[in-house]
Length: 393
Image (cartoon, rainbow, N blue to C red; front, top):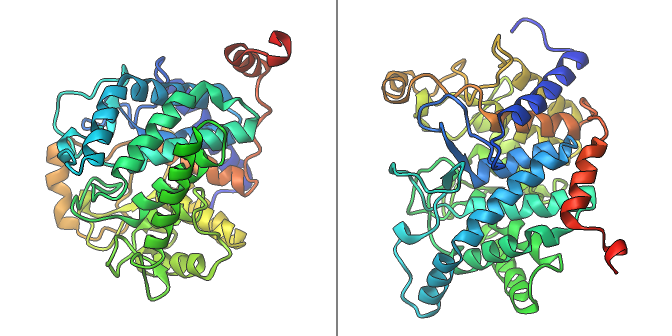
């Protein structure tokens, strides 16, 4: 890492990332987390996939993002009965066990899979709703295409958002994580701002989002910055997402600036961001996707120079095959823990599509990559799927 990539190189990697994600997207619409990493192969996450879809949407890959949202909606519709059972149990004051909640990842054909995972995570169900609403608004699409899936996701969140669950990293099941609550707030607020929900559900969604927001701004703040979970005093790299792209906390607020500063101080080394202090997963390396999220947060606060430097650091992690990894080992928190993970799952996930997508999202945000106009074929496909109201009236 002797010289920083120039604008042409940064833009080229963004264009390549869009092409790579498009090429690896499954015909079902699912985005594979990583095509070759043993623990991820064959699976797609609502959370990771929603951020990937948002990156693709920002790059005018309209049909790709829309097909992922179709996949999300189809999974929720297929589980309507499960969601209604969860709602009834919650309303009766007899909530079901975590093992009976919706899964966090699914096979490409929409099944849960048959291997054990840290499954109860509510973040993905908020993130995809936020992302699909943003996608529809960005490209003037009709949200009715995803109405049923959005409503079911909101109802599931209303029944579950107050429960502790696993965090983004599938750890710490007994805590209430600020990043998770941020994803819930983003999804509920986005859905309630549209006309896809019934009046009653929209009102409940706004009320829950308001309550969750008040919670994180009281119990989720310490010394002026957001923290990893309610009552904690540590930060997590994922908190940057609440500033941008989720926009739960305005980037100009003191809370946002203090959170960015604390992540930068505690978790960032030369632009590379760790997940959290004490991380031992593959030794606790630095994550390109988190560096790009921190870059987005810097940009939201007006610091475009730091946003660009975050993008450059992420670009420097690219392999000779033009793949962005899940993490790199330039500055490990606990090198003694690398071998056990390699023995368990092999080398670090490379490529990680989420890394590529966040790179694209930041490159577009700061103008380093100007995506081509969406192809007419994508627009025609979108119109055909929605139907043209002016022709049917």
